[in-house]
Length: 325
Image 1 (spheres, rainbow, N blue to C red):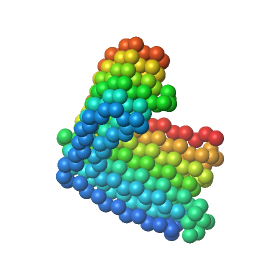
Image 2 (image 1 turned 60 degrees about the vertical axis):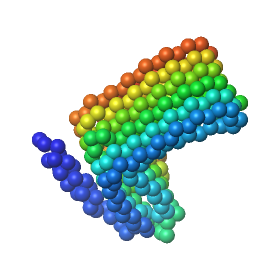
Image 3 (image 1 turned 135 degrees about the horizontal axis):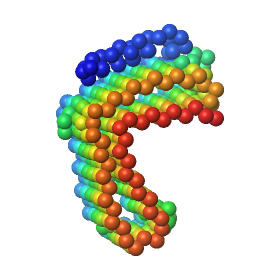
Image 4 (image 1 turned 120 degrees about the vertical axis):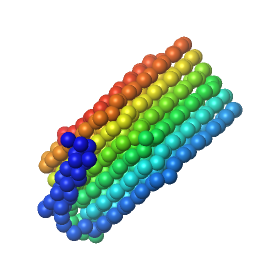
C-alpha cells in the first residue's frame, strides 16, 4: 500500500473521530481555527565570544517555521493546521571563558509547533465539559530541520554547585503539546518527509558544577496531559520518512560536578497521561516509520570529580500511556 493511500485512510479516520457524537460535540465556549503555511527558509545564527562575566550567561538561537500557542478557559474547540515546506536551521557558536555564573546554550530548530492549554472549570459555563483538539502538521523538505551547537572555553565557576553548563541542540519537525483540565478528545495527524539533524560539539575545561548536555533529533512528537477528566479519547497517527540523526561530540577536562550526556533520535513519539485514574481513557495510535534513526555519541572525559551518565538512544516508534493515581 502506498504512503499516499495510508495518509488518506488516516485522514478519513481522524475526520470520523472529529465528528463523533457525545460530550465532545457540545457547544464550546471557545473556537480557535489556525492555518499556517511556511514556504521560505527560516534561519537563526548566533556567534558569541564571552569573557569575564560575573553573572549567569544564557545564549539561544531559535528558528521556528510555524508556531501556535493557545491558553483557553472553558470547553474549547481547537483546529490547527501547519504546513512547512522549507528548511529550518538554528546555529549557535559560543566561546566562553572566566564566567562566574552558569552557562546555558540552546540551539533549537522547529518546523511546526502547537501548544494548547485548556481549563474547562473557568469558562462561561463550567458545566459545559468536553474539549476537542484537532491537529494536522506536515513537514516536507529534504533539507529538513537542523540544529548545530558548538560550545568551547573554560573556567566556568558558578556559586551554585548544581549549575555549571547546560548545552542543548534540538531539531524537531512536528511538535504538539496538549494540557486539558476536564474531558478531552485529541485527534493528531503528523507527517514528516524531510531530515532532522541535531549536532552538539562541546570542548570545555575547568568547570565547577553540573554539566547537562543534550542532542535531540525528533520527527514527530505529541504529548497529551489531562487532569480532572471523566472521559478522554486520543486518536494519534504519525508518519516519518528520511532520517532523524542526533550527534554528540563531547570533550570535558578538569570537571568538578556530575556530567549527564543524552543523545536521542526519535521518529514518532506519543505520551498520554491522565489523572485521576478513574478517567475513562481510549487511545487509538498508528505510528509508521520508514526512516533510518541514528544516535551517535563520542565522549572524551578526564579529571572528573563527580558522576558520569551517558545515553545514546535511537527510537523508531514510541507510545507511553499513564493512567494511574
